[in-house]
Length: 187
Image (tube, rainbow, N blue to C red; front, side, top):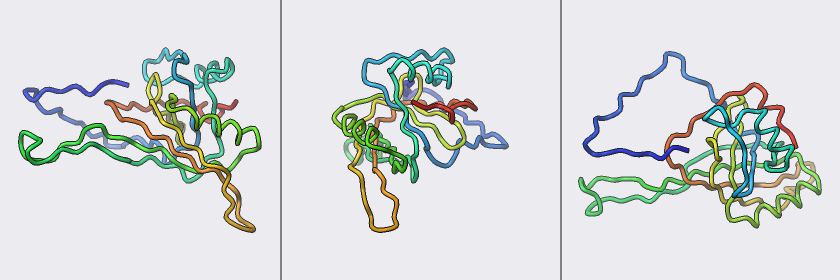
């Protein structure tokens, strides 16, 4: 991920708005996780391609969590300064944390046990894939704190699920990468 660098003397960036904006998808449907210190090659310079992810999955560096419903990404928290703490007296945000969350609906005992282990890690590298085959997380993935709940039963006739949350710091540009084969990624 690129670090956001700016100077008060720089001119404002001039954004260009495309006539047809990119449809990145409405929801995350897959999450990929890697232990801190793991390696994955990303030759494209943005995000690893589906083939690069699959090679890392095959070698055991990366795992895929599938069967996600209710996936969303929202701002979770930020350090906010205002008043005398800023030059202008206005409000400034720093250290913006995003939260990727959802429910895992397809799982068995091996998935449940694995998720219990992942929760023990204070930090993992994470990427997510949307329903339109876009990957977010950059070349190295988000430095995320995982939290996977235990299996939840809501009552008779309701499917069971596992809630999850991944909190990560947004630190600069978050370029999406499209690959038609992202939806084929599997352990």
